[in-house]
Each structure stands twice: as C-alpha cells, then as structure tokens.
Amino acid sequence: MNMPEKNWLEWTIFAAGVALVAGVLGYLTYDALTCGDGPPVIEVRLGAPEQNAHNFSVPVKVTNHGDTTAEGVHIEVTLEKGDGSEPERADIDIPFVPRGATREGWVTFQTDPRAAQLKARVLGYQKP
Image (cartoon, rainbow, N blue to C red; front, side, top):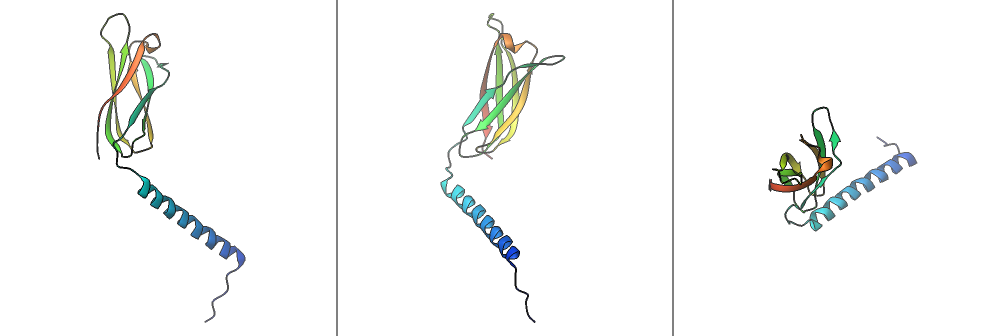
C-alpha cells in the first residue's frame, strides 16, 4: 500500500509544531535549572482608596518576587489617623501566590483613608 506524499502545507505545519514543542521543552528545562530555592519575597502595594455606599475600599496588590510559592499569605493594613486615636485595622488573606505572580484584593475601612496614612505589612505565610 502506497502512502501519499505530504505537500508543502503539511510539512510547514509539522515543522511549526516541532519548533513549538521544542521551544516549550527548552523553556521549561531552562526554568527548572535556573530556579532557586529561596523563600518567597512578598511585596504589598496599596492603591487609591475608593468611596462606596457604606465604607471605603482600598485595593491591595501582592507580588511574590521570591523563588518559591507562598500559601496562605496574611496581610494587615493599618489606617493611622494622626490624631493619637487607635488605628483602624483591616486584613486580607491571599490563598496562593506563586513565584513571580501578582494577586489583587481589597480591604475596607469606615474612616476615609484619603485623609490618613495607610501602612501594609505581611503578617505571615506558609510553604506549600
């Protein structure tokens, strides 16, 4: 039984598929060989507060600059009014932040954060 010969389009698609698979395998190999085993390095950035019907929402952006994944990231955001009163606190849990990834969420306050100072810090995380 004779097999029909492939035309130029079939060879082109075959070559593109081989190049794509080889490229993905090469990238994954490079990434596995160059990836360190250092701890997560969590950066927290606060966005501009937005007024809602009953409170104020503040966007929270969490980025992991470390070599490994952080799980159960617990973040505290403090609103300091500057008048000597007790600061208002809010917290957020981000379940999973892979290395090199960014996750976003929001915290809410009763007091207008635009007239106060906001501070954020990571309280803790787990190694998966």
